[in-house]
Image 1 (tube, rainbow, N blue to C red):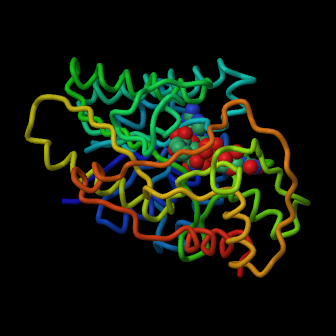
Image 2 (cartoon, rainbow, N blue to C red):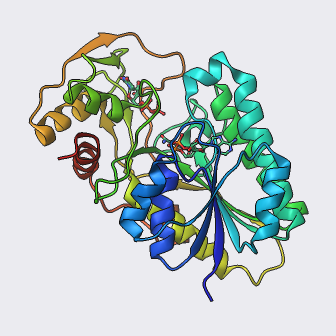
Length: 337
Ligand code: NAD
Ligand code: UDP
């Protein structure tokens, strides 16, 4: 019999790709989103790819009653938890919004899981949980520490999951994403943030599309290849495959009545600078991408990339797609060509 899993935050960028990948891998997905950073139109796009539309609930994870209704209606085998706010700058301006939505919302979700005896959870964590005081590459045992409320919300949720693995037998696999890019090969779903993009590639693609004038490069003459920030860009299609590998890992250990908590880095192990991203986008799209040098953001680090051996060893997963492929699929989605 097909297993039913709950996917929170499914209309979002990564969640929409995950719904497609989990359905295609043979799971039934029940999907929950409050549409605060996404649109219900994604439903029909997913329908175009799958040929049908999964069971959708418009619900807020902060609403305990709504969550209870969803849990009481379905016998979930596990949860893939994407729902959350993700803009670092906004989190500095409105910290309580982030603590409330991300931390309290997650606690409600975990409380419902424990009440309904659902033990498996894959959680969208982030490389932002790592302290700036580390040597590269970042390993799962690098020092933890955050500099902004968004990062703090991820670290607190990880800590809560660790507690619940010890005291409520949850089997938790936080995936610490590096920088997701790209879109589904069909061109139907991809990253379409409401308003001005915060992340680099959607902004660069908007400039290539002449929707915005120039990329503002947060440049600080960093000790990197060209003075701009270096990040580990992971293709969203590889990223959702990592979630399937993680969920299968949880199924493997399900006989165990003890809880578990195992954070895993999800990246490529390679870094790319902002100027390299701009140049590669110009090559992939044939369009000029204008940019200007502006100062750094307060939370920016010079260079961030992952140590990926643990993901290979523990999940049997490693990235396959190149940054160039991520830029090309992102462009196909955003430009429609
Ligand atoms: P996204 O904003 O596109 O998707 C998140 C979804 O969660 C949105 O559809 C939003 O409407 C929904 N949501 C937010 N609060 C909710 C609530 N209280 N109840 C129900 N739904 C709610 O973001 P994304 O890029 O797809 O990211 C998914 C997850 O991955 C997030 O938790 C994010 O923090 C994490 N993450 C993202 C990145 C990245 O660069 N994209 C990197 C690391 C971690
Ligand atoms: N960046 C930039 N201009 C932008 C957005 C980002 O120069 O409009 C840089 C940022 O300083 C970092 C890299 O691009 O070096 C990736 O930033 P993003 O916000 O996408 O992800 P982060 O790693 O900060 O989570």
